[in-house]
Image (cartoon, rainbow, N blue to C red; front, side, top):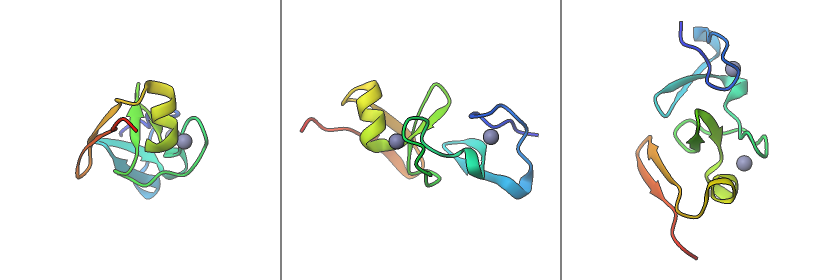
Length: 79
Ligand SMILES: [Zn+2]
Ligand SMILES: [Zn+2]
């Protein structure tokens, strides 16, 4: 049984969402900074915790953060 990276409890099939190669509870796939619900494959991750790409990941981990996963790599550009 996979373990949810957010709460470290086991993830059962009925409540599973897969994103960035990990299995999460549907309710646990939310930004750890702003609590916004995230779309599988459409968010960043740091230290196994999910964050939204903008603005939280950029704010917390710098403007050059890279998200590798889903359909491709997401690289932040300097504004
Ligand atoms: Zn969870
Ligand atoms: Zn956020």
